[in-house]
Amino acid sequence: MELKPIKMLENRVWRIYLGGKLLDDLRGKDGEDGYFPEDWLASVVTATNPPRDDAPEREGQSRVETADGPTVYLKDLIDENPEGFLGRGHIEKFGINFGVLTKFLDSAERLPIQVHPDKKAARELFNSDYGKTEAWYILGGREINGEQPHILLGFKEDVTKERLRELFDRQDIKGMAELMHKIPVKPGDVFIIEGGTPHAIGPGCFLLEIQEPTDYTISLEKCNTLGERMPDFMCHMGIGFDKMFDCFHYTKHTEAELLAKFKLIPKEQAQADRFRVTNLISYERTPCFALNRIDVFGKMTRVCTGKPSAYAVTAGGGTIGGVNVRRGDCLFIPAMAADFSVEGEMTIIECLPPC
Image (cartoon, rainbow, N blue to C red; front, side, top):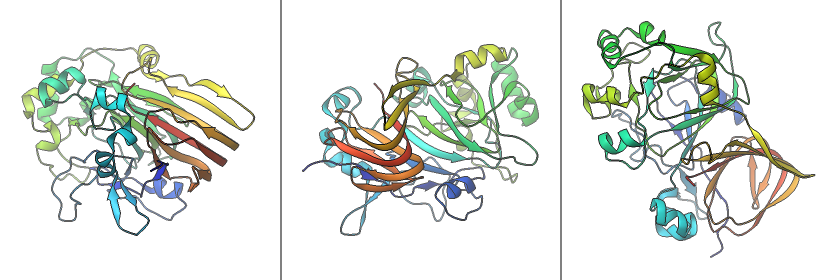
């Protein structure tokens, strides 16, 4: 059977922070902020959330609507035809796993101050081949309570494990935030957040996030924004309060050093009369994933690459492989999909798994 692009259903995921209105706006719907501020795109990852009465069994995993009505999980389709969906080379190196997770994320408040493990810490502490290096492509934003969109990133002064633990035990959130750089962000900015780097997405940020396919988040905040105590697991992910501090890189950066290391400069890759491709994140910068922006103004042909990918439409609309799409839609592109046409006026973010 010939493989084609597959359109995903909307896949909103519960999180500890408020947001999501701009996600609804992207899709032309009236909405409001709530505890479903993320949409996981072409996801085979199950979310790590506290137990909830209404939580789906496989929350976080993307679903597809079949021709005869019922929905199926993308992961199940991959498991049924791994070579067609992922390609032989990808399977030989990474197993039967898409190898990347992409999200739309809209924050109406600051996310908890946090860190994700790098690959070394993930192997030692979580017995995982994947850490959680991630990157953010800023799509837009809004002013929240007089604050413009910004992020907290990296330590701006010398910090020891003992000092950070002491602030954590006292839950001195202001003190922990003051250790970090506050960086304003605007549409088009690209940041890479390597595993081990302390960070927090600030209020008013609307972005596309690409990351290694895990949900390991070490949080320095024990309560949600309502002051409600969260399960300890949501801080340490099961490794305990002592070991969680081994996930941090205690590296001091000036702001100039920080931006030189973590803020990326997009580079135009190709341009023709009817399309333009801009590389946002390259495999030279990280082997974990790559990200391209494809601007289509007319028609282009996507040639079979033998590698899987996900497409997120962030502006305009048209057809991709004969599938009608508009902004906010996401498609999974099987590795062995036959050549297909992309037609219309639209912007696509192409999300690629490890090289």
